[in-house]
Length: 180
Image (cartoon, rainbow, N blue to C red; front, top):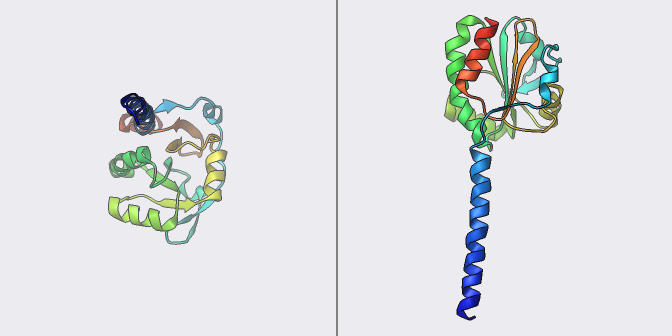
């Protein structure tokens, strides 16, 4: 191989690396943006659902009626989801006395979720599943399958806020305060 061919191959590798690196940075540093289509559900009633908890108990959505619910769809393989977990733990602690309930719904494998919950000290209910979780997410407006995905429900069971992607602590707190 001559020097010219080596230089062309090296440049191609560098350009490919820059493109892949740029895509990775954009994917892992995605900022929270309002949902484009889901707000049409704002003002509608929370659809009934039931999903399994980590201990195998089927939990029903109506058990949290009367509370402000922050429903967060996530997965252990999702970096923005994992960045939200400490924020959700803090919010659960700060607003528990105000009748606020964080509910995590994991689209993931039971073993991975159980391990992550133990390691991270999650202090709110975690529900889990595959196809069932997808159906619940879709019924709550996440027809694009984006994670994380957050829905805030008022005490009467009415959808008040929806967000595709990562959400800031200040945004969640502000939306909760509107409902107190």
